[in-house]
Amino acid sequence: MFNKVNAEIVAALRRIAGGENVLYGPENAEALAPYAHDEVVGLSAEPEAVVRVTSAQQVSEIFRLAQAARVPVTPRGAGYGLSGGAVPVQGGIVLSLERMNRILEIDRENLMAVVEPGVITGDIHRAVEAEGLFYPPDPASLDSCTIGGNIAEGAGGPRAVKYGVTKDYVTGLEAVLPSGEIIRCGGKLVKDVTGYNLTQLLIGSEGTLAVVTEITLKLLPLPKVQIDLLAPFADFQAAADAVSKIIEQRILPTAIEFMERDSILAVERLLERKLPHRDAAAHLLIQLDGNHQAAVDADFEIVGEVCLAAGAQDVLVAKDRRTRERLWEARRKIIEALKHESPINHMEDVVVPRAQIPAALRGIKEIGRRHGVRIVCFGHAGDGNVHVNALKDDLPVERWDALVPVLSAEVYRLTLALGGMITGEHGIGVTRRPYLAMALSEPQIALMRGIKAAFDPHGILNPGKIFP
Ligand SMILES: Cc1cc2nc3c(=O)[nH]c(=O)nc-3n(C[C@H](O)[C@H](O)[C@H](O)COP(=O)(O)OP(=O)(O)OC[C@H]3O[C@@H](n4cnc5c(N)ncnc54)[C@H](O)[C@@H]3O)c2cc1C
Image (cartoon, rainbow, N blue to C red; front, side, top):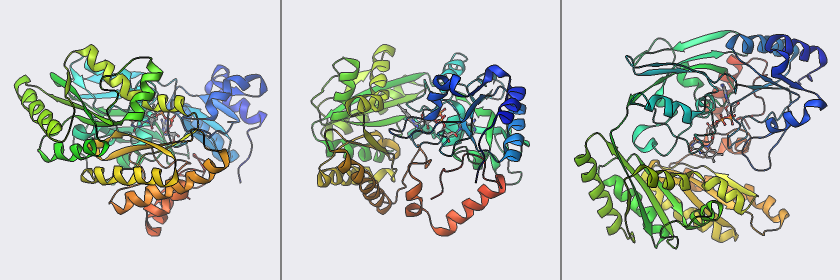
């Protein structure tokens, strides 16, 4: 269906983007290799060419070329995705946005920032915080992933409990359509109902509708006070139940992260550092913030009491920056640590209504027990989003390969029965395509296919993603 990248196309790519920005051929094999995969274990596909673009105009010209030649184009940020979205499964050109990495403006009057898609999310945090401003979405990969990848995946993070996710902070986009046309939707506007909301349609579209080349982000004033607390529980289920009990108090913590013992022990081994209460079955890492110390302290008292009443062994407080950073570093290292622990593993990203977190965790552990596989749960329990890591450990490869699809289907069935969905923030990409029809009806999928065809009639943009 698609054509291969040939010498003529490479010459045109070099004319458009400059020779130093195009990787192609055996002499570039080493440089091309990192673009063959993202963070999904065991998934890779070699790109035929990589172009590291520096402007929307270049993206537009590449699309016109690719469309005429019927060559697929796969956009890529930092390749930190967890569903294979940036992997060029049908070959063709990988369009890397990594060199479009400028923060163009921090607008203090309008509380907005304008950035290019290749900016690392953590760099946006640091730049706006230096101005007393706040960009809340904080995926655990924030020091590696790009804002363009966050937009494409609709990324979340621990602070979603109180502040919401990426989509809640994007007010405007510049994007290039597969036809090569450049569009601008929204802008520095708090309100805008002019026609369909194309900005929100592009968010979470996993790089299958258009390539985002400029982003306008809404900012908040930076909260003045922050407290983090760590509550270890001797009982896994008691920790899960405590999440619902905290929310019931009508206090909205900034974050409530759940970390099961095996995830903590894996992090300890990776960091070669002992964490407090390492023998606990599970920990809750809770953050509270606000502008008034007394108000935050009052919430902290209530949350601490709820945790102790729910069976916490202790409530440890991290008020200073260094302790806080060490705690959050441990949380952010869990995925890497589990990979270290069992290089072959499988991760799910299910989401349920918050009140169903205890039932979801109970059901997931039961699935693991039934199949004799180690399943480690952690994640953003405060917003109902749990990461479910099945570890291969010593299981024979054939048994593991047969087990993974069974585990996925069982975990999805459980989640859907609890009113949830099969992915909260990592996306469908390649890995969850076979299961889309479990979660969405035929008319919904047909409508989505129609939207895809309207944007990309020849199907050249990121083929092999989302649709079964
Ligand atoms: C250790 C670890 C922790 C993580 N924690 C979180 C977390 O807490 N929350 C969360 O939501 N995710 C998390 N993730 C997943 C991942 O980091 C996010 O999905 C992130 O948004 C990916 O960004 P990226 O720049 O790496 O994108 P890539 O992996 O490069 O691409 C992801 C998708 O975006 C598309 N894309 C990239 N740039 C553009 C663009 N400019 N225009 C159009 N499409 C584009 C690609 O085609 C692909 O489909 C984590 C991953 C790891 C490895």
